[in-house]
Image (cartoon, rainbow, N blue to C red; front, side, top):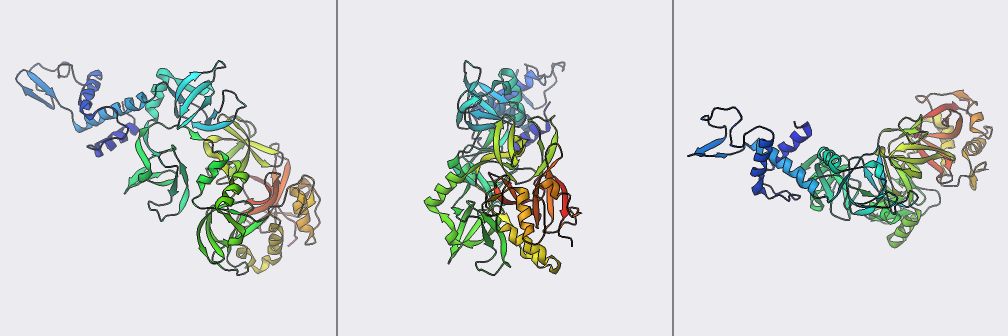
Length: 527
């Protein structure tokens, strides 16, 4: 029996008949013989070339009789099936001692055979490795995806069990040959960049078109790929220096708080502001226009003043020094749990593209920082763990300022965001030198004549209740811990974002208002 996936592979082989496979080790001339053996083993034809039970004189379908000898030929479909079987065996045979990973999320590859040693890579569920040997402590010394390291044996199948699992995982994959390869939105070098693929990474092929391959992440140029039937293998745990591979022409913001990104290369009040770069944020420099640089960062392309952007060797030094190990969410909604288990309580949900500092890495799970002294566990199937820089945040102050009724509220927003990048200090109330979340909201509102207590739980009782559908810039958004107690607060600034004093690692920053599930929203302005 063949699964649908195998049938699709066979159809692909039929379409590609006559093309040489890059991964082939079995000469094409022996495929017919292999096919015959496969059909014999399946009982489709007898060893004499006749189906069992057929009359001795009955001619065989697809057979040409020449005297007393019969020559068995195969239909195109049978030849394709035979080639498919040979291809599977060929991939499996490329491993001297095959291991297949079975893990919820991903398996950490350690530099040494000890849990406390540095993590140098990841193996996702179904990935393959070559097992080189076993340490006295039981760790497996493996090679995969250009990496060599150690993994816990509990998550690796070997022998016949590994072979059986491998047959289900072999698929057409694009293997990156270049040091770095830009992932494009469309199959053209003029298309927007969606990300960067690194050497030896493997991507499932969804479509091929005019020298390009489409994956779930975007389009890759076939000029820098090997497209072949293969198993998935390890990906490196990006070292700090590998953050440089994420940019084509790196620039790093050298401001102390936020740098405005403008739609056009001119200072025009706030009318053409489309986003902000945080301190030490990364961008790709696309061009120079006088005193302005055209840049791309996050999902924003625009202009910044050149004097505030480091380039060249200075940018590289700044990037390596400031890159943080982050978990970048790659799904729309992700459950954050109290413990590293699918059975653990879900105490909040986090949203796509948010970046969280990594506190601890476990096999299949990563512990992330949500706010100061608040952490959660997320499944590594749904986050990319890598050293990264902060990138641009979309923000257009005129969108709300244009509303006459929101003039006071917009003043509050503009006042609050000027402190972005300043430090978080537990118990602090200085917008310049450091404050905690409730100290931040207390001091911002105090500037506009609104008195609040210095505790988020108490602030959540002030003013009137607001829904997410009716909240306006200047409203306070509250979040709770795993027991449901409110312990964090931020100020809604419009555009689906809040500004908040988040943690010692993050400082005062802008995030999506639903970066995790809020417990309450309050209007403390009385309008």
